[in-house]
Length: 282
Image (cartoon, rainbow, N blue to C red; front, side, top):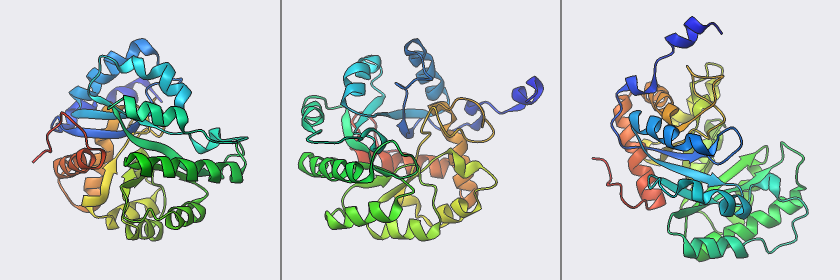
C-alpha cells in the first residue's frame, strides 16, 4: 500500500463519536503491544471516543504477570479465563487461582474468553469441554458474566450451554462471525452478541445480514485487538481507537446514525459488565 493511500485513511477521531464507547474485548497485554505503549494506546482510544476497554487475559498466569500494566488505567476493566486452545492435557481443577483473583480484584468483571475451538489442533476436544464446563460452573458460583469463544464448534458450544442451564444468564458470544441462523439461535438462548471489525469487510455478506437481524439492545462492539482490524485500517495492528469504524458499519447496516449505535452498545456494555464509574449514556 502506498504511503499516500495510507495517509488518506481517515483518523478515528474524525468520526466525531462521543466519549462513551466501550471496547468490550481487547488483548493489550499480548505480544504485539509493548508495555510502554499502553498510555499512548489509551490516549488514542480516548480521543476517538472510547471510554472503557475490556482487557482479556488468556489464563491466570497472564493475569498475574500483566494486570499491573493497567494500574494507572482505571478505564480498563478485566476479563479472565482459560482460552480453549490453552487447555491441552487439562487435568483440573484449573479455577482455583482464577476464583481467588475474582474475589480479590473488583476490576475482574467476567469469565472469558472460554469455550471451544476445533479450528486449531492445540488442545484435544475432550480437554476443552472439561475446562469449559468447569469455568462455566465457576462463573455461576461467582455470579459474573461469561464471554464465549467458539470457532468451528458452534453446535457443541450451544449444546454445553444448554446442558448446563445457561439460557438466560449473562453471556456474550465474542467475535461473532456467523450467519443469521446462528445469531437467531444465540439470541433465542437470551445471550448477547459482540461484533468485531470483520463486519466492515465487503466479502462478509452473511455476517452483515446477521447483524441486520440482531436487535440493537443485544449488541456489543469489540476490536479483539491486536487482531481483526476494521476497514479502512485493515492490515494495520488493531487497537481500541479503531472501534468506531465498526460502529459506523453496523449503523450503515441497520440504517441508524452512528452515534445511536455507539451509545446503545455502550449502554449495553455498562449494564452487561456492571461497569463502575461510567454512567449509562442517555
